[in-house]
Image (cartoon, rainbow, N blue to C red; front, top):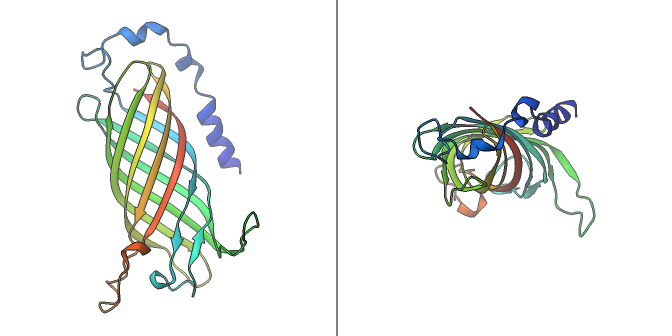
Length: 221
């Protein structure tokens, strides 16, 4: 809980020196000479809410039934590196501490928790802006990497699988060095078990799919 409060403080109480920047920054040339170009390094801590995800019985030995991944908060950070006019390479770490549930609670009733489950995505990808302006920059992002799946269940061990993501969002600058970012991101994680069983049937619909809504404060330098 203390770590979550600290992250909230980082997001919503940025340094006063950054907030003190004056308005004329919007009309100054960028560091690479073109007015309006977003060619800065960026660091952004964020909070969000992640939802969705099912671990199917035929893709795991944890349970004899399909289990859901409980929706809960997620948190993380990304670091963006400029590569060309507005395009950036993004390095992302995104974690969710959640639980397995049996999905048997019914409408508006709580589900039974079957054990803890931590999911951490380590991703690298590209952020591509469009319709760029001084007041807002909408963008799309795509990336790939791995997901560390760590079930807190007796007798189980963590595993690392291939994962990919895609996002759409908007960045709203407050001043030259500070801004807000809101995005919707989706994740795909492969749960293919064919390496352990060559004769096993692999159902492509039985991978792990999750979505999340994130809000963060980005610092540019």
